[in-house]
Length: 235
Image (cartoon, rainbow, N blue to C red; front, side, top):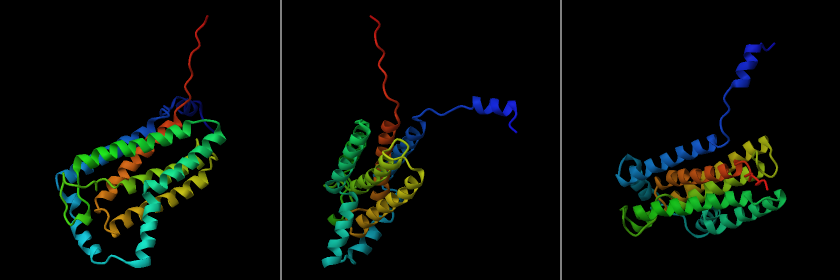
């Protein structure tokens, strides 16, 4: 039996603002991305495995049909040429069903974050990719953070959110949790292939994940925002 004191504590318990979870996660993601960028810039332990892993996989690159299949999987997982049509098509479908452009605004917000923040860091660092045979900064390269991994993180997790999340097309907690695992698997596979095929350094991948998570949290914040209510002027 619940006492009056317990009911009072429950009723007076502070409720977090609607924006708190996604904004907090976004700030953590931004802090991690900033930290990793600094660690790359300062040439610290964070890049300690990069060259050794490059040397290992460079001598063991697959060829022929196997290489083509792995390249296709990696591109499908995170290349904007493939991910953009998918997220755009799903966003248009959900917007049509919900009779609202909010989901489209959320998607554009996330994509803009990946593009603007990602290329700001890429051009600022100018890190050369493994294919160049050297790991230098302020050169001819855009290796860090991995754009493929950032796109994968944003795209596949955001698809789950807009389809099965609380503000999605068909809210379903069971499917939401199930497909989050699928999305996570696609992100990990994409990141691994980008390093195994020697397109990115190992440290580029967590940087891409942090960037993608930052963009995802911005999209989620837009999706969760309450509708704007304009006050009518009394005549």
